[in-house]
Length: 100
Image (cartoon, rainbow, N blue to C red; front, side, top):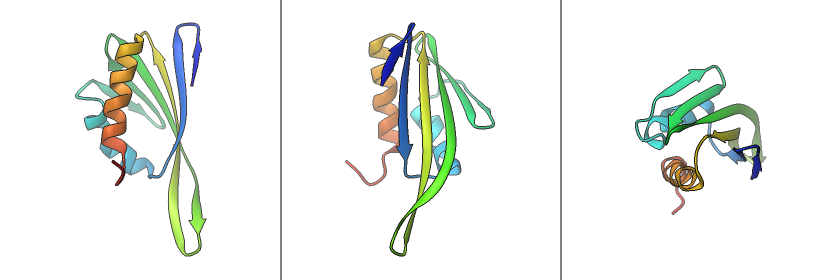
């Protein structure tokens, strides 16, 4: 995580496909407007914007098991720390797989 000039960046690897991620996004965004431009996603939330860049990476293989890997970069612009925290809490809740 890094803060640069009023922006806040997070990098993650997620165990999902692009299609799964996009399916989770409306719930994770809590009804905020979402704009999908290829692999760039813009969400207008909390008086600011969350820009999400996604990139499908090679699958992880463990013996016969193959797990998808999606690289996710999030940039928060114009959101205060509490709004970022609330967005991430909801995002994690909607994108968590089998965890708890």
